[in-house]
Length: 313
Ligand SMILES: [Zn+2]
Image (cartoon, rainbow, N blue to C red; front, side, top):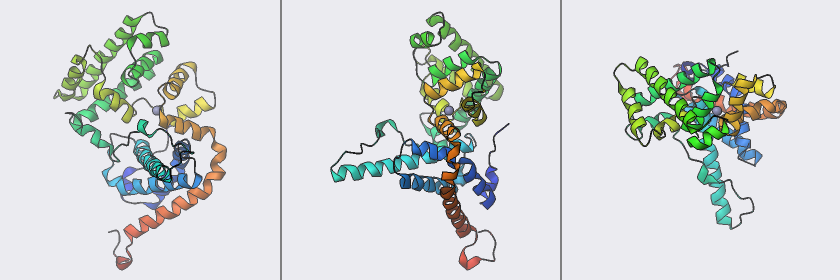
């Protein structure tokens, strides 16, 4: 029951069908994200239009550290922020604040090419890739072991920045030392996973430095990477089962925590989309117009009028 994902090489080759499939697949969840933030219907459609065109233009720089959905969501977020900024500028210049815009300060615009994350601080890009890979593997094996409390505790600490004393209460653990124990064992396992993948020791050194910083708190880039590489985001089929109320208690506890306490905006968008599947009919005209503009863009690139017979250029 794995989710459809596009063939990025075909997207990079500007294959029409692949791009149209992308739009059919992702239009609903992107609209769900934008709809939570942009009130005006026409403006929402503009944001979506700009998102898909941005994805087309940027696909050559696609970084496989991220999934395609993450790539698309990152662009959508930026276009949404751009729109909200323009709307706010207009509101300010017109001197009214009736339609108070959402709190922009809480929205940080990200680079369209998320690989820039690796350039921050002294993290080498390859280090960030390895770290994301290690974190994903840890999440995966913890999920398979059905250790959902452990998974939530680590997400709360790494990604949520929770303190030990808040964490043990939330999860009904014995005391703070239980949290410290879970963290200690997780870090030990992360180190092992790192060593397996990193014979040269680059990542292992980074992780150790993270551990030594402060009193064993791992914030720094691990938390940022956790969120930006979305290492713990459940696949859409898990969200579908949550919506259908067929998800067992264990995974359900984690998925709810991730949505409602970690406030993962992309999983929320997917959930909204799944809950509102009756909106498909409403989305169809939008999808038609998105597809038309995508095809225009693709054809203007691959068949410039003056070289119509010379194949892709
Ligand atoms: Zn998520």
